[in-house]
Length: 396
Image (cartoon, rainbow, N blue to C red; front, side):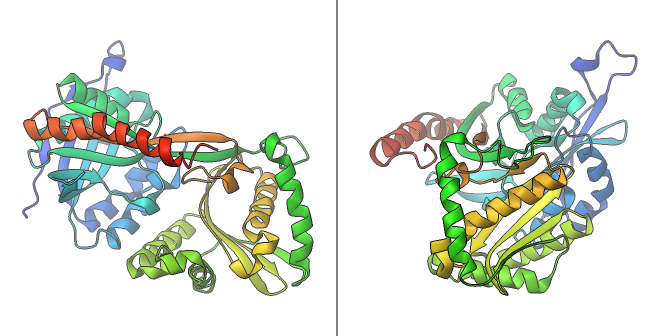
């Protein structure tokens, strides 16, 4: 398919109408190549530095790793917004023809999947509405989609501003609540690194001390933190994660060579930026639990923890989490984000949650109205019925 660009006329910002030089937004939607993504790297990094929280999922290396591996050989629908030449907005997408709740649909989706943890429109936070409005005009002018679907948007994310612009133009929007991701605000002045952990799980954390004695029977426990990428460490993690139930169920990273490549690319690129943190808890020389995480500025993000099920009586994954929190607090890290869905083994450490949702924009056509009814009306009813019968796994 030929590379097509959709440009919008300048859009002045209503937020800055009283200023002498209000922003003038120009948005473009192109089918970008990997090289074009890479060419944006420096500008994209500068834009990300303006975000209130510079998370790894919004940085260019995350999407470049995704494009090189998971979205290999695809052109990337890329919306960029500029204000007098300065990059102020980036939205990388994928174009798929697939079924949306069993109905064929032309979907423009986020350049992400379950391994992306979260996604959002990266834009200048000082002019969110104006940048979002320009981005929406570029999306609206593209006639090749019936549904825009972006997954795992954090509550209050910038993509919601694009949804507001779409709704003002008569398009249909919907939000499908998904993850309640736990996170822990680490203490800055107290001596106990676990002092901010939920008090009602204090007894559970206390029981870990007895289980730690069991771990000592296998050798003196040693907690390691590596801030570089190592093939040996990476392969050790892959073997550990795939050795238990995840490997048997086919959900381990090692079960999919493409996902292995994605994590290798991602960790290598993050290491060059100084963001990688790979932890291992060993009993003697034997690794019993490992963690892949990223530290950006003063926040730590932990997408993957694995443990050796042969040591489950000692709760090695929870022991590693305890060591990890203590080490991060000593370093002056502000937040430990456990990512993914809320579960009991995370709630023991982190009581705060960050809600996420899959967000949708539908064309106001017959097909679009049908999709909207399914997602916005029928879907919640089915979900409520399911949770009434089986319970909501994220409500503890």
